[in-house]
Image (cartoon, rainbow, N blue to C red; front, side):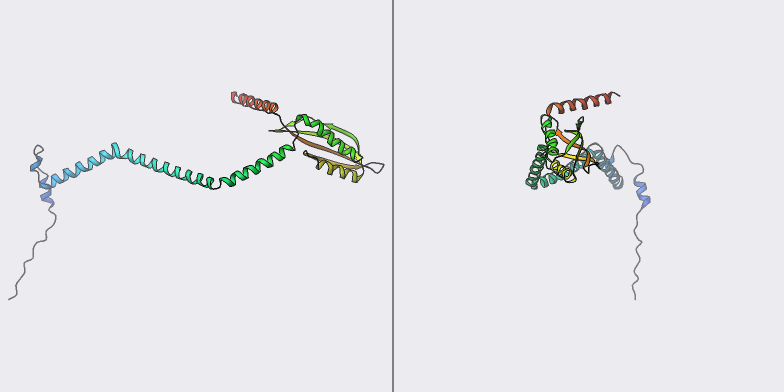
Length: 227
């Protein structure tokens, strides 16, 4: 005979029993509570404790940690940049020395205030040495810049084409910087040429002039700030 197996009823979650466990709990004696209420209370206490720690302590620590990590990254980037500079320090020193040398060479081409008379005499002598006849040689007022000043010189001379060309070459070859601007040439009745130009030479400002310039700049800033 075949043996018939009895099917066992499927065991599931007994919601009604859980509800009964939470009814009629004695708050004065939680030790007698069923298991489910005790577990629920323990979980609630655990969650509340963790939330309190997070709110009063861990959140500040997390924020401080985030700030310190950001600061660490900033310091790391700064260190990498300084390391790159340190690796190329000798090259930077060499480039700086070369810049100083070039600037010094350019500065030597700028006369100071006391040497301007000598430079004007050199320009005049360059024309006379080529046989030119000066009709006008008139230095103008200085135009002061940041650390140097420009002096325009109105020039009008007559001579042959080659003499004028040689004069322009001699001016360009002077040890001081002199430029010829607004050059205009016209023919004279005797076949000679007339050259009109504005020569501009440069000089550097002395310490007294630089101090005056700084005082004027500070005074202008003060007046502007009061407006």
